[in-house]
Image 1 (cartoon, helix red, strand yellow):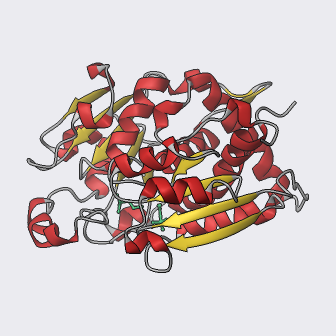
Image 2 (cartoon, rainbow, N blue to C red):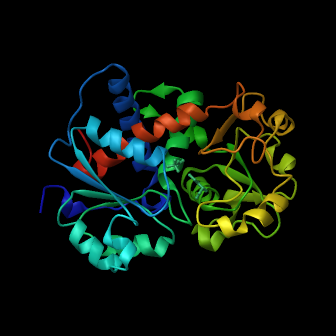
Length: 320
Ligand code: CP
Ligand code: NVA
């Protein structure tokens, strides 16, 4: 067993870490990003290998993990359902036992959270959720870091996460993996999510895995959800795995498009975020996503910086 594994942690959902661990991770992400921007080499994972398993498509998740691992001196192995035995019914437990004997870290993008949990239960090495039907914790990690970068001062110990307390995040759209993860983040970090979804697509506190009902409020009208918000965010109307529902969703979500009126109802300095890929004219207008309040490109780039901090933490523990 390599050093560090005795304290092995997985990152399967946002609530796997405490607020104090997030404060640490955001500070490491800030330092790691600044080194990257200054062309400073930082290769603490030089003998480590990350296996990335994709059962769904990806651009950002693949590039951010792969580039991030190479920048830290490590290597990656890329597997998909179609080009591995995963697509030929090898049990996920057996795949976990085998893959985790050969690599140091595994990132999985799959369908049900249960499949990810089963992999983790049989893995000898840390496992990261790269998106499931239920959660997308790496994305919310990047989103919160992006919010802090734009709106929080840097103190002696980095960002003070208390500045998130009392803030309002407006979620407009599907009660999906992103929405569930925002609810977990709100519960841990003390902000409130104003959720507006079409009827039939609501968030479910049980699925989201939250116990404090005060961390979110439900609004019928998306404009009301945006009133006074510090951050307005949305996502595709049809997530991966739900394509058969696309036609019904196009009709049901027609009024859940983030537009200039919704942004005007939010705080004057509200930010707009979207995990991407985006569909201009569906969940967001071009005016908003390409407008001055949108930070979607920083948000996408920050996937790489926060995940480098995450991989460092899972493999090496705390630095210094
Ligand atoms: N936001 C996100 O996870 O993007 P990809 O699907 O491109 O990885
Ligand atoms: N909710 C979307 C996010 C894509 C990054 C999906 O699961 O497809």
